Image 1: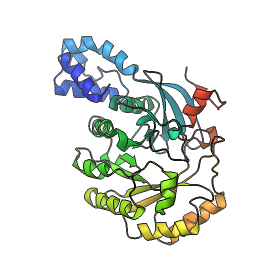
Image 2: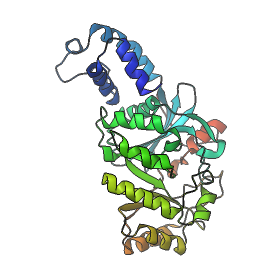
Image 3: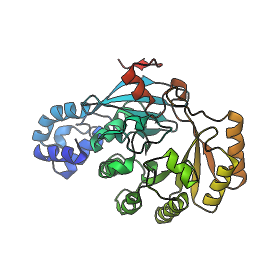
Image 4: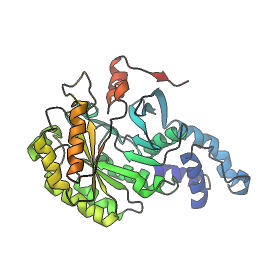
Length: 343
């Protein structure tokens, strides 16, 4: 189900655009669909036909997604979410009222360090299913920032992602720069995003400044050189006034060399950019390792010293073996995991 289908269903119940917006706004706030302003009864602003149809619509929305397990951690809680067809995706409650959501079941990019892409793309996540992940999170705590950076490559589900972003940036009352679109570098992103009513911030999955190594790590990503990718992103930054967030999964002995750090300095000096170093989340299913704490600290200090704004962002869920796609993989193969089951 898409957001457009929800609007059509409301229209069939007799809701005009203003009525539909109020109902969708209530859903986005994880409130009953007939919730209005304080001391305002639903019969004062919703037609009878709409009110009569809300119970069925409530069931429809509840069926979009449900949390089947929650995994609290020191760096954020990861939610394993089941969709109506039984497929599962992951959402992550981030610090400072942030939320990371999934846009696909599986992924076609095939990043060699990511569990999500091992089985390829299974299906797209609908715009309503994306928003439902936000609603589930808001039923637990405030959500003021949403990053489309979980399972999947958002540019491969572009229309649905942009539809979800539009609703979250309007009825969802989330600041546009607090909606973050992550991509490995699909050219359509740079064309489409600036034209949207709600223009999100942009995150680029870079991972290496060496074109050959990046092609090995991201085997099915568009063949855009890191230099050209950064230039495209810089143009977007000038158009929007938002800094570009660069994602760099830091893997021991792979992309943590001095040569790579010098490459980052060459690419990003003078750019409106933030480099997010994300130490690799170790899993027994893959051979990669994360660098030592001392090395991560030294690399961060080096980049700071060269004027590159750098953060170290732990991949939420490390202490519960819950990196991108790991919860889903464990739920499918029956591997043990620390679990806090929902009642």
